[in-house]
Length: 130
Image 1 (cartoon, helix red, strand yellow):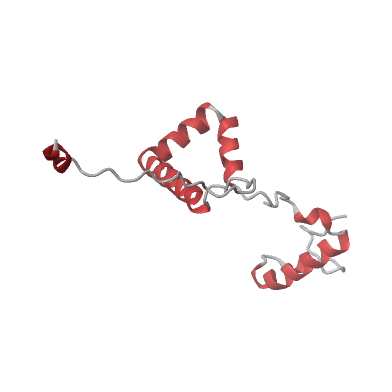
Image 2: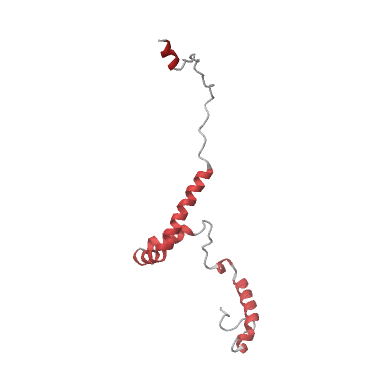
């Protein structure tokens, strides 16, 4: 028996279990921004690689077969605050438009075919309007 005691390691004294200090209820920490950024970067890298391999052909097919989906794609890549006003002249008065035309004609006058057809208000016949 003495040999058995020597062969086995001695038992340690049992320690009292350590208690973790009580913590106040704390909301769990949100995921690190780096994780979200890395996931987004990985996703965009995969999309970029897929687009390089198949992009132009697929876009042409979608445009031909599903024009509504094609427009959704186009709109999804435009900035949210994209100014879609095509005609900025709608906001101008008639006199402001005439003034712009006069300015353009002054610059273009040397290139006009027949400068003699300019009316008394300084606007050519083609753009004189009502």
